[in-house]
Image (cartoon, rainbow, N blue to C red; front, side, top):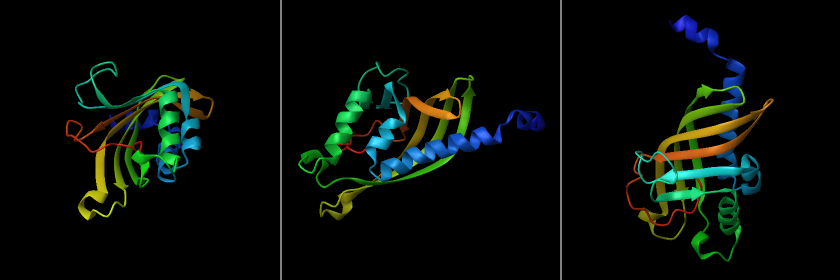
Length: 171
């Protein structure tokens, strides 16, 4: 059984997908939001539901439920030095592991990974300045030759049903 699974495994594709997901995280940590947005299609959905039981972005409230235009506005606000919600600006460190191709439909892929995001905002309140978020991330990727674009991203935080102070930085 294991040998049959290994025959279907495409090591080169796996490496490209892993690099793509890690590159997305790196761009967020570098606050290179324009390059990060270039990884998405113009009709994308970026979703952080408040419950893992939610099956659609239209099912109730969400921490984030953004289309491309909202993502553009959100990242512009994060880079604006006059934005109260981004003062002080959040700094993040993403840790990505377990990147796996769950479905390969030829022109599209569904990829899952585990991620931790450490967010730091130096407000002078030691216990509150650093937060840690963790969860499962699902990427739907459109494939165009050897290039990928994110059409849908779902982040299921392990504590999604908790209340949070304002979430500003993307996951």
